[in-house]
Length: 559
Image (cartoon, rainbow, N blue to C red; front, side, top):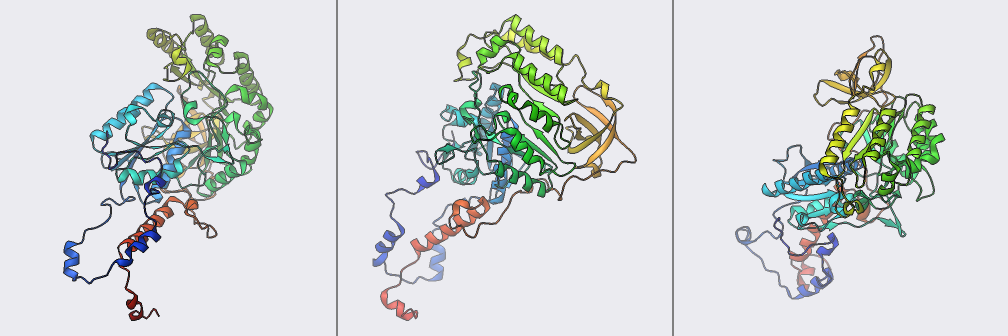
């Protein structure tokens, strides 16, 4: 457990000042009897003690690690941006960092295990630690979180305040929900500073939470019920991103299909507004949607996915092909609903990519249930399939159900993985000529990674002039998860960005304070730290500066 300079937790920054503390006016009246005296300069330098913290927040190095989904990645980008804008230096080297900011995922046990081990490692190295993400939000009283500062998933706009206090040795926990007139909001403002992991890709969270109550899901405990951002705020964020050189936008949330149900709108309405803002050659990728809510919008969704500036890609998790298992999961759809979504989109959006998720070994899953899932994969041959062995998450209804034996779960996971790797979804595309958008570097640093209209990965030669461009390639090789493309000789790269992209690590979204606003609540973090320094200086002067005697006012010409 990390040492703390105070025994009790500070629930909020405002709690640093107690109601019992004297006000500035009371301090002033107390000092009426103080008689100023002169001191020799030498005595002042030798004997006067510095009445301030030896650690000045905003000067330390911070290493941040994020686990989990693109929503978590977006939160991490926002936290990094605010900290950098406040003066902190973000580093890629955990050993040189003064503080570790660990942004967690609660979906599966292994992710939480990595998170817990990282906390232990940080403490062994005597690093300051601040934790964020879904794990501490869902279970802040876990023993291994004792004494640590926590940033709740809806409090990421206050990361600078929490880190400031953690640097000084205080433990602060901000876990509240953001509300407006009693209505829960989507979260922190979208116009906060951020550092994009990839300067060419903007991740926008369109809503938080969901309308489901899946029996295996721990994320619901952290993200809560559905809360959507207004369309105008999302459109403005997209517009700003393109002005900063972004050429690809990812829309993310726990369930994009449910967007807007809490604020009287829907996903297609948002998408049509966003499409108007996308420059030619730039692309939009839609995130995960559950079957029940996308069913109502299939006609409109097909039109949107056919739009030239929208990837013909949709991630629709099925989890199981057994209606019995789906019922135990409380997924609120049957397998025929899922098939209707896939069949409709495949018919109306030729070549569309449907990605899906499957859980192996959910409690009560029989061999017959699992065989139905195998048959579904054989039928659709999903090009992108996320296979997960079931892990009971503490506090979920599924954790209390009768579990499938571990060796059975492992065997089913292996069998489904073998089926998935038995087919190559891209072999028939060899010889095709495609337009692809180049956005990043491959893991082995040998190629640039691009995506075609169907969000299929195409590796292209690593030439600087291709980065952030739409290029034309001939497909000459296909693997399980990718294709390789040779640039067409006579074709010139097209630049979709309307501005030069930011440099890697550069802070996005730095804006000026509204001069008509007289409260620091509207300041950005880098302005907040200036405000706090000014405030500290003013209080120091008030507390330590001697008050002249009455006759001294005349001497200073103040009569």
